[in-house]
Image 1 (tube, rainbow, N blue to C red):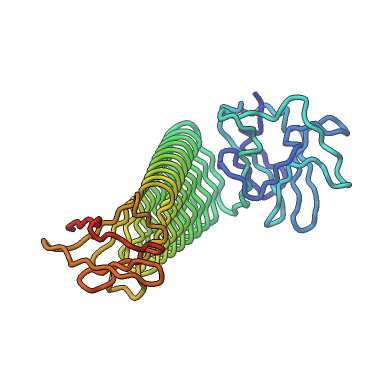
Image 2: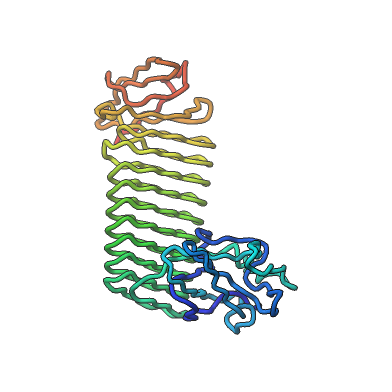
Length: 378
């Protein structure tokens, strides 16, 4: 089945990369007349690259008939534009100055997961540095001090971005990716991957597999995707999203936002006194409450663990949706003797005190039974 895949190195005009396996659509517009649709004028399939500034439309013919790779293969489609923020239009030709593109005689190429190509298109800005595409072998790639784009393809690859704002994609295989300095975007792809952002404000995506993501310094975004992933934000104000699977999320230093997603996840904002926002999402989650953190368990029977010294924080620690019927609370304490636990009610909330210091507020909870709290030495 011939698709939009495997056209690597097809330099068509100057500044875009279409990555069929990135797994999400950013700047792509997906409408009825997908790439591969025949044109009314001459029957040639067209891709539209629309300049978001000047409105110029660049028509790229003959994608349907290019002998490239099947839907089961790997690859990328490279389009190019002189504009910094172009928009790819897979459109139906709704504008008057554009011929209408009818539906093709046969449907757009179908990928192995049952979706068509247009559900997997992502537009990636042109990079000024090195462009590298790997093979099915196990390879090592190292970028330059410029903004590089490196794709591992198959195999267990090692990809080092170096300085600059790099785009690294491991694709198939158990890959190791390190962004280095600069604001980088890293995709693990398929397989169990190790992904490190390094310095800079980076974006890390694990995709499928049990991946390990380390944000490093900077304000990073980490997305686990499918699989049982491990995410560590490192220094900076980070956003961590576990996605599917039973994930472990550690915000590290800084004011972090953690979202477990589906699955039985473990969340920790870090041991600093900075306010972190923790949301377990669906599943039976374990949430470690640092000093000053705000936590929401979400669906499921969740376990909240608060330290007995949380009362030393300037901002109170709070659980927004504690359900005494299904959730549980543990108090972590040093030494052999647990602290004395007392409770009070204020504005419809329950306040818990350990040896006279308030350690956690349970929002919307009244009549709380302190006898249900478990003490854990550690």
